Amino acid sequence: MAVCEVCGNDYEMAFQVVTAGQTHTFDSFECAIHRLAPICEHCGCKVIGHGHVTDRRFFCCAHCAREAAGSAAHDAD
Image (cartoon, rainbow, N blue to C red; front, side, top):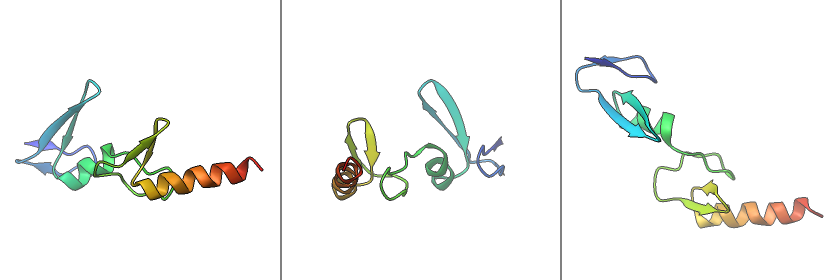
């Protein structure tokens, strides 16, 4: 059995994900998302779909990317 690095559950059906050269062990997709999913820079939700990347910044959708760009323009005023 293997121990989930997020919740500590010792689970016989745990799985590993290798990303950026690091191996992570989880007992559920929920824990994997919690640890590995990027966070939308506008609304703060976890990006679990394709999301939207603008200028190397992660957003959950095009709407949040536009909103962030609009607020950045207002911040410059």
